[in-house]
Length: 317
Ligand code: GLV
Image (cartoon, rainbow, N blue to C red; front, side, top):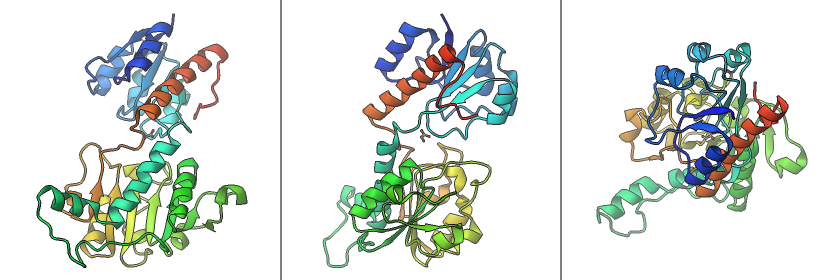
């Protein structure tokens, strides 16, 4: 029986399945393991079911025991894992695409709505009973007729585009390559970031974090946005230079932000906390029972497939 380290607590049905399949080392207290603890706990294991909170950098991967053959990441993103280091050590890295598209796109839409319609201020006012209806109370930005720029038109970007279009938004996107007509659903393609940003009344960051996208939204690129644009990020905090975005909010270059992800989570830049126009959520993208169950099942399927066939369709390195 293969021995698997599971770094974070999963939903009960997923842990039950793991127990049936493997000699499994569960994290009953859902402790956040340090890198050294993770290395220690992985001794004698054949695989690790990891989460986005595990920083599996080059140094950590080098120190993993040679018995570890797979890092099955419980996330579609894998910016927390050094893919090259894993490859060098002959460790397969897998992710959980598709199953979280709908849930994450829902949060992407919530960020757009929350930021544009001043939900943070509204919630604060309602909770404090400190509000009075008036014709100009918390006037926000209407989505109908507003241009939405999608940075990264993968599955999640496409789903956000579909819902936003049904709300009357006009969709533009930038992606490494132009989508087929069928997938683009009438959205306008921009072959460069500057061109996309210049038409983005609302920006939705949906691309993966990679060497190419880290700090892509920065002091310089923010200037390409129309004045008073809204910036939302449902992908990864690493894509945004926080200081630059907070400065743009301070200058009213950016009207509002909607964020679910942050650099250095769970500690977000305190500059966001000061802003009433920051609609902020604690990385809830895939947080529904259906989706978290499906993600963990897929992470388990990936381990099964890898040990049975020596390969896996969701291998990313
Ligand atoms: C969530 O952020 C994921 O990458 O699955």
